[in-house]
Image (cartoon, rainbow, N blue to C red; front, side):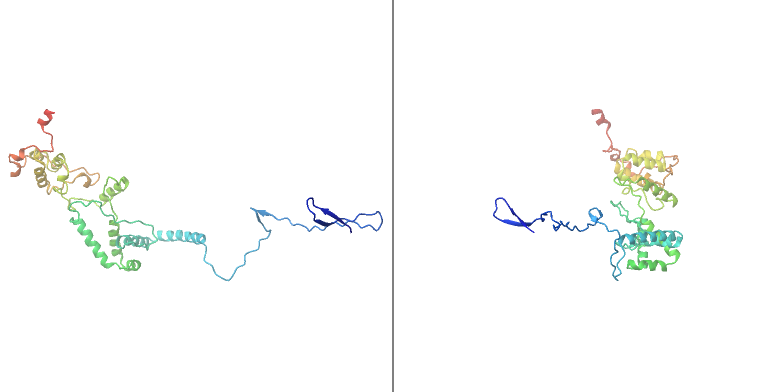
Length: 318
């Protein structure tokens, strides 16, 4: 085999490269041999990653691993439906489960030991009404709550067993107490819930709520000094008739409120927010003679005009 000299321009270096033999036409000339090219295998790729026709399963060890979160979620969804269906067919157990959730909210702080998604709130009042804590209702609720607190365990985790030990009458009484603490029919300017308030009216009619029998009275502090004179006269007129309202018509407001409180006492009159929904206000029959005024309303100084009312002279001057 001969070699051909290959020179690179601009360089003195010479590389020897083998060249194919040149045939001389004789029989003993060497035939060129084809170069060996290895066979190539076609690879299938998906997204740039090769895909094997038969993927090999990953090797498993003997370690028991936790179930996946998704599998646990799916399994417990089945369990939730089955539990719902079972409780729906056991009214006594369902009642105890609801009682347990209500009692946790009413008697324990930040207790979350229930699987029932119930929200029970024992709401306070944004503004303390005059005499609210001294009412018969407030005292009865506090006394009842204290009695139950003595019968319930200190730890929320022990509550379920204690409820199970109660008899049916005790559970029913505790259920009513806890449910009652969630009632809220307070009307506030920023709290507009007409449907909830309508439901409150339904509950009031169901128990035949009588606020006068519950102990509320139209006194100077609870109502009369907080409304205008026309409202005061309207209350007296509804409770005792027109002839009872006329004698105090031109009184000053301080004297009018005192006399109105005296005249309204024992009549059972209620302002509109306290009346039973759908029941018309009580209107007294006209009296034969007007009731005599007390001494403090018959003096000359009491006959002076109320500064809240516009004076005829002042209107004429304008």
